[in-house]
Image (cartoon, rainbow over all chains, first blue to last red; front, side, top):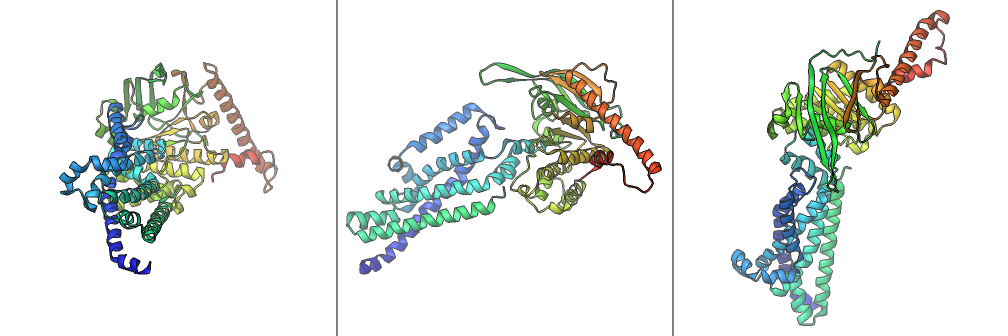
Length: 220
Length: 299
């Protein structure tokens, strides 16, 4: 094992880099597009300040539909779109496209649910003080739900670490790709063990970090 | 000294004209929370809205700052018809109407200071120094200057409600709406909070409208009262007006409470005059002191 492992080390570094590239792009898309979408879902939902049933139902339906695709199917189905956006359908950048598409509605739903935990009365008090919707989003909802939002992002990161491993199957690169090429196709069980161990460590770090930040931010 | 020392002048600051509010219940049926009600509240008054639960008193209070949009009628505060305002103008107008709630509704992830600064920050035209000065002023007013860096979770219920009062007063409103402000507090805390509200009314001239189901609170705080039943305004009276004409059970009950208090006060006044003569320099009679200390205590 030692020889093969040391031989593989450079490739392992590259794989780790690719995994984090995919995660980084996917999570960024989720935060910058899925986050606002989640806020919008929340505000449009019945009983909230922008309550609008038709819009809410349409948006909700879209979110559900994208979320109902098994990730591997979504990846394949999106190949033409991926080519259009990334210029290619293989490699970590290409894999980041379906990852983003899957992560956006995922986080949107998590954000919507997290915002429901903010007591109605607090939002109402802000309205009574003359706050605008925009101010309520930033100064009330995000502030009050911030530790929940961090935990939502943590859940998303852990899920998408394993999604990014699936992306390896279709040539997305990354740690999962390594596991499949060496561990599965070549029966190099030790490589398989190393990659799995690596994924376990990364998941633990993400979860620990997420919990720690959430705890610090929570003053309730 | 009378407890109701504020003398409201005659010009109304709040004028509700035939406001009506109905809800659609989950089963599709309509429910009239507030039948057309007209009500005017004088500047500087302390006005109580009482009624059994479900009588529509909270809805009526929330119609004053348009947290509930009336289905019909108009709501005028300080001469401005709020129902005619656009969203932006309404937000501006709401600065003039502070509100406190039963559950305090403070931002849990913001310090006491930031909570009080909130209404000033959302209306951008205050400098940092102005905000700082005003926040400190308001915290001093409710006796919480030393808590400015605390988070609400570290405060007692009474302290949270004081923060809420400081927050409501920060934009210097003419009106303070109170929605069951003492219902989550114990009786000792309630007493001291009522004293704070009285001081605010007397010293700042803020008109107070309070919804409560506790008649003792009305007795100790209000100058005028409206009784609501099933969304209708049953009667309206000055708290120390003669009790004979009361039509509602709550009105009569309140009259008894007021009479009891007046009798107690009269007795205390008499005792206070007698005591020094009978036993100069001695301890106050035991029969008087517990009630007396309870009345004036202000934590």
